[in-house]
Length: 254
Image (cartoon, rainbow, N blue to C red):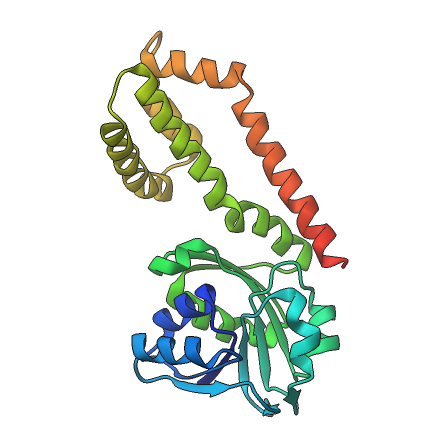
């Protein structure tokens, strides 16, 4: 299968690195200097400068541009794509259908883990493209198909915004270590090791089971856990997801 990337930013680069060698890839963009740098870094891709009308007829498009550039982009495209896979946050299938002609459409939401081929990508759209979408985006990490755009917007709040929320947790844990007397370097290394070891634990256990396995009666974990509950950490996380989801809904209406 040949994939045509429209856009060549950081997300596009991450996707291409996971897919190169498995697909024939061409990349379309406005900045020829950036395109050339991408080709120098990732061999065996074709690059096309979007300085004139580009024919998307019967192409499998991976759309990786900024949402607010869709109106300008459509002026440079002609024809009807075979399939369009969008990674644009807050851009509905209905909007995509108005802007970019294609026979079929898919929305996806990768996250920052795509940089290391460890994305958690949520996907929705036309059921006929489900298998191909899961295969394509499975090259950059884990995938989850959901039935509705509402579910994808909720997943955007959890997995799309999640790295930022976990970054706050990681930073706070390190700050706590420093506050208690560790050097910044040692506290940071401990937190990095903690997160590395936590992922396989979470793959095999429910969060409550992990908590119960660590927490002994009247112990250090119990004391720290009680402090987090007093400070509303659980509710703060729930509210963070609710607020992020509300913003995703707001963006999809623009």
